[in-house]
Image (cartoon, rainbow, N blue to C red; front, side, top):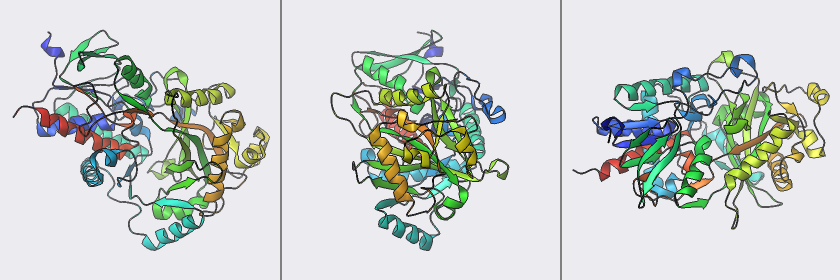
Length: 469
């Protein structure tokens, strides 16, 4: 066996969970031989031409969703500092342990340059008023302190983390896809890449993000890795003028509100609010376009609009077992109608069941920040039940911050979160295959930067605990 291909730990994916796993491993055991394999580019080579051209040129792989730091590098960079938000770590580790790990991972972000300001901790009078209005509208306000990195500042922080890992001797193979995980007799002991190389290690950590969840679901299926049917999150990205969201933005930055709809009793939640931000498209394998949003720290890039996601959470029962494909199917319908682009519709047209036209869109006071979005009709894409859920949620939100349910409010479709391949893991994030651990968003363990980062630290310590004394 080639000693150059032999490692102590192989981490698949260089998103936050993989980064923080490697960080903790070398912090505690500097001589450990670690390999991170990432299908995308190193962070200094990640650049989206659309920032300048306003048009997607179809980079493969997409620099927005792949590369060092994963989708987090170009996200709004919000760190949710409460275990109540962002994943299932409290269910797996217990609430107090999850909170402790979140504090530790937050300290690391601060060490590498994160803004020390935290939103949602010093405006108790205003938050009480928001909560009162939410209760009157049958909405639940989830209080969660937020540390905002900002898209461009988050990029700098992850650049420093990449440099640190490299200096600590962590080997990183970029532009490399893991084709398969080598397993036999119920044990994982290596990976095979698309370049024909095989790397070996007694510990394999699958740390793929949402972009890699479909790949990992097939790996699980092929190798009998135990999984459960996870939740499907499908919805739209809402865009309004900053003035409409001013009170919420100023006092909470991101208001996390949950609603159970009166018609179907479905759970709908707000997610990823971007004050003075812009709506963006994300591209996955085979050119699948879904909508997302960003916000920058620098005033140079700020807009006059706020955007946020409304996601409807659906749990399915047997015989359904392909939640990721279900979400992609809905996204493909939208792409089909818009020639591979994102659809936009005014809420007025959405309620009236008619297609938004270029002419009616031009009448709006609200100017879309996603310039190549195509006016259309979301009723041709989203199931009726999800349409009703979104309408009822917006009408409820209008009681908390009037103006959200204006006819001019923009709805972009579709937003889908591909983390529905729920891998069954124990407290050490060990799967039923010995030597294979699953962490992060792609395994449906976490749903955001902070819990993913905390998850990486916890998995690293579990690995270190298995080493001989």
